[in-house]
Image 1 (tube, rainbow, N blue to C red):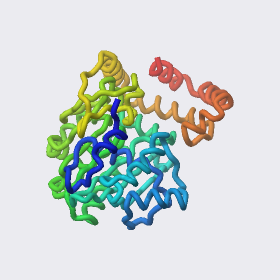
Image 2 (cartoon, rainbow, N blue to C red):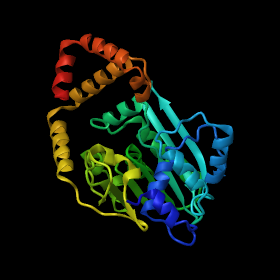
Image 3 (cartoon, rainbow, N blue to C red):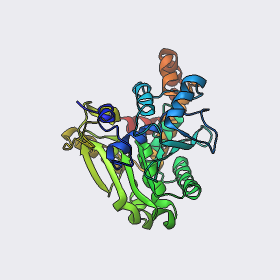
Image 4 (cartoon, rainbow, N blue to C red):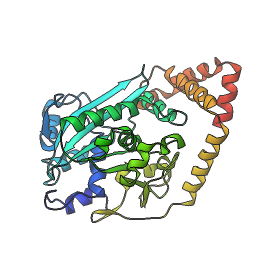
Length: 342
């Protein structure tokens, strides 16, 4: 079944000749996950082709987050459509103290527009904790950084703007546009949320969100879980994936035909999971959610691991450490943990 790699072979035509489309958006949202750490200076602008050359010759302090990225990076670098696009203002911050994981990059395109891409969750434990905080708080640190980043870019580069991301990156894209200034909102062409969660009713009802909701395009696979969390009011396209269950969140499994996604219908299992999570959110109050999340991640962080990979590499010892940490919780915390997990 065709995916973005097949699209790259088929649509290798300069963007000035064939206009931007929804599959281009998905590819650029994945670009935000690439390990550009140490490859370009703060204000430098280099082509995707040059960034791959530096990656091969200089190495990087970042790491590949998904095995398919290893093939996508050279495919983009050697592409007529993407190779000469410029990247700039790459930022990647993981701050355990502020409980923040934030990364973004700006792509300057041949059609005289820019695409601001926000990264979704990486493998850092603090990144996953920040995601869960979305269940009870609107002001998570990465959302605040997303707004600041968009405002900075709009002042530095005077071009029309597309904004997008995958997973949490899609949520950040919508939030940044909703809460930036009206003058920046007017420069926005489209906002792309690729299977990212929605928002609380409080955010949905703000003037900023209402101003931009018609520019937002959300794409979710037919058994979406992440992309159906919380509230969505924007136009949503359901697409076909070759994976099953939560693994459909993998954008490399999304099916394309020409320059569009292959459409599908939402599955019964997605409906069931969505109703289950909605029920949980209605039954577990904000304080209990915070206690559960804080305790859960205190237990995970007792292992001293900073990423999911590190935790899995020494699972037996880490499991013993987590069980000991759970036993040390007070009675109320244990009760909330048990009830919530069940």
